[in-house]
Image 1 (cartoon, helix red, strand yellow):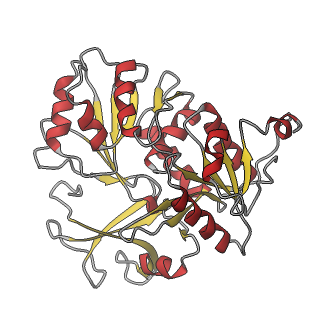
Image 2 (cartoon, rainbow, N blue to C red):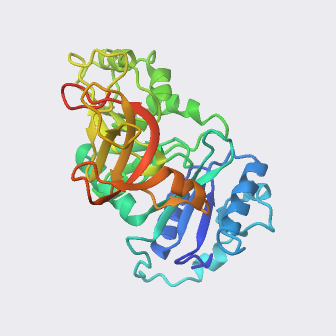
Length: 360
């Protein structure tokens, strides 16, 4: 309320990792506004580009920007309505302390993540509340989260990989352990997470996992690794499994930002998985995965084609980029029945179904 956030508004969250950033994101969502996570190490020029893009897509209305005093100078004051969370306590304290009903609806935008893609120009992917709920509902069940689980918040808020860590523990009664880190070297914080030994489940990239491979893991509390964001080599998964004396679960989760974090899953099996890369496995809940030829016809098992994604995780599209939305989000004849219409996301990734019905 202090920031005038509400349905239809966009709130840029430009903050370092803290308990307050988690609370800020939850507040934005409850207000019905959409949050845009921007990494605290983002250069001033790139941040300005994102702020201008948001204004251009909202009839010139500047977005709200929630930040901290030490980061305020990075935001051009003419590009956003700036709210400094650790300085503007007055308006916060003057707000009523009674609970307010959420103003969000299932088709409200929940968050917009700006990715650079191949061009280097930021493009915003708009994820709705129904997309987010579908993913978190699935993640909570697949990863078996419980009240005893502790998740480390250490990866950049600007990557949708972090969405798993933000919301899964909150809906299952688990805990978020916040790691602040140093802007620009967040990748090194993973070592502190391992050395602290305060968590038992962790979402990270293969690059993060490779950094801890040579760490002493004999006494680690970690029981589950959820790996995503890059090609996951089988050798790395095998090394981590062998380095930890107790049973562990390693999941390979695949999914572009446009499909809400993850749409494919495979639990690593050290005896069965012998290919160079860990398979990406089977579809997540309410996700449809298609491997099609250039005429949008299903390929035979073992035949390489392009991967397309359907289902409840598909984003609304790209913010203020109707041309790109039409190019990547297609409506085609459903290959299953030959007559109904199906909305697909064109990933550009090549894949094939193997003999076990899993995707390689």
